[in-house]
Image (cartoon, rainbow, N blue to C red; front, side):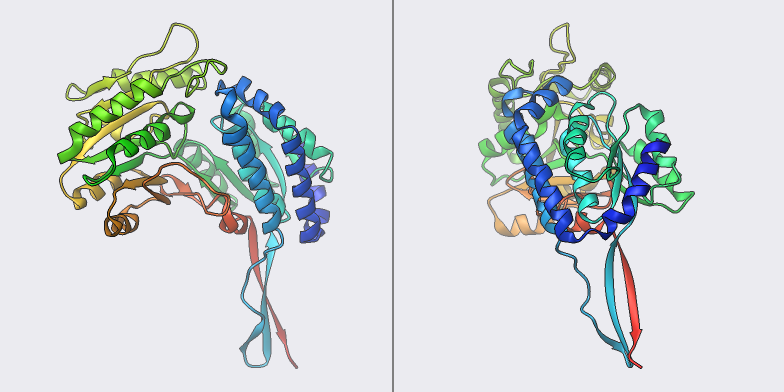
Length: 432
C-alpha cells in the first residue's frame, strides 16, 4: 500500500498538469481498449460473480464503456462563475482543480461497473488513484489496470488486492486526500470516522431499501414485471433494487397474484450458462444472511413464493415474495441484499409516502401511476436520491446517482460526480 500511494503521489504533478484534452484522449483510449476486450471482461465477470454470461456485455460492459466516454468529455467541461469584478478594483475568478491522490474501495456486486464509476471521474478531473477491489471479485479490476498500464502514465491508476485489512490500510493512509467507497453502511461509517481524524474528504455510496409505490390506477401487469426484474436482477444484490412494494389496498391482492405469477413464470436462479435470470449470491456468508432474514420472519408474514435455498450446491436462493409484513419488521427496515421482495398495502397517498420514507435508507425509489399529478407529487415527496416513474433501475451516465440519510453522500455519474473529485479555488487580482 505504501508503494502504491507513493507511486500515485509521484504521478500526480504531471497528471494534474496534463491538459483536459490530454486526459480526455487517455480515457477515450481506455474506453476503446475495454470495448475491444468486452467478451473477455464478460467472461471474467461471470466467472467471479456467477452472473448470467449472456447479458453481461449489454447490461454492464457497454455501460462501463459509455461511462468512460462520458467522463472523458467531462474532463473538458470545467464549470465555475464567470470572471468579473465582484468587488470594486478587483477581478475574481474560480479555478476548479484536482484534489490529489484518491483512495477508492469497490464492492463485489458490480466489480467492473463500480471501478469505472470511481476511477473515471477521478482521473478525468486530474487526480491519481489507488483502488482496492473486493477480494471475491478482483479479476476485471486487475485486467482493467493491465489495459490502463498501456495507456496511462505510470502511477496514475494503481490497484492493490487484499481483504478488509488491506482496505483499512488504504483508508487510513496518510497520502490520499479523498476516500471514496461503495459498500455497506457499517463500512461507510468506519470510513467516515477514520477520515475525520485527518479531515479527509469522503464520498460514500452505501446501502438502500428502495420502495416501489403502486397506485390503484397503475398498469398492474407492467408494474409487476418491471418491479420483479428490478428486484431480482443480480440476485437482488443491488443497493437500488426494488425491495419493498407499497401498493394501494384496493388492488393489493390483484397485484400480489400478478406479481407471484410473473415471478414463477419468468424469474429463475441458475448457473451462468443455464439461461437463468440471475445467478447465485456472492458468497456463503451472503447466503446465510439472506436465509437468516427468512428464518426470522414474524408469524404475521407470509411467503407467497420462494423463501428457500435452491439446490444443495452453490449459493442459489429462490426469488422470494413476502406479504403481511409490518413497517417495523426487520425485513422492511434492513437491507437484505438478496432476491427478496416484500409487499405492503396503503390507504392514502400520505400513508404511502410515510411507509416509503420510513426506513433509514434513501438511495432510490419508484412510483407507478398513470396520473401525471400523482407522479409529480410523489417525485417531490419521496425522500430518495433517485426517483423513477413507471420504471425502476435504469441508469444513464449523464444523470447523478447517490442517496441521502444512511445511503451516504456524494454523487456518482454525471457532471456532479465529476465535480465531487475537484476542489474550488478563488483567485482575486487587484486591478491597480
